[in-house]
Image 1 (tube, rainbow, N blue to C red):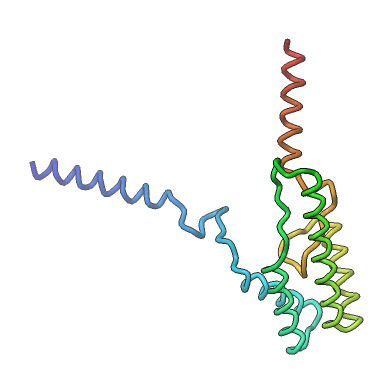
Image 2: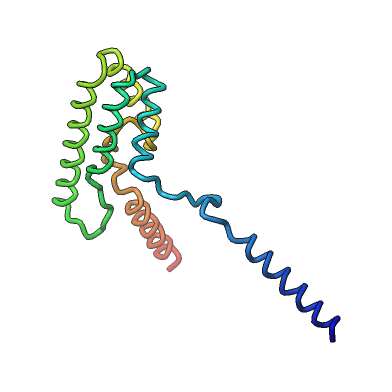
Length: 166
């Protein structure tokens, strides 16, 4: 009886440890915790400091600008329920937000720093890099609803395939 109980305990312990180790924690692969606005602003400011050699005063002002931009940025929703007019209004609001950011940033940076920043932004946009950067970038029209467009494209392919098989 004791031997049977030991075997059962060992089996339970093995199953418990393997099931716990199979589940990734919050920092598991592919599961990043969303960054807080302050962390995002700090990361953006640090990138700009490294790239543009910002002074302490500029760093403070750029951090405040980045934090304000992150907290107030308009979100482009990819709802299928949005009308074209709503999407256009959201796009216009985003473009205005970007222009405001650029205007305020230009007042903080020197002419050389701003020129270098613009050049880096153009390069990032050309690469398609839309990660944390130096402020919002308006994506090209084709990229606004990529998930929705991909889904529509897949459904159209399925319909064509079904028509061919009939």
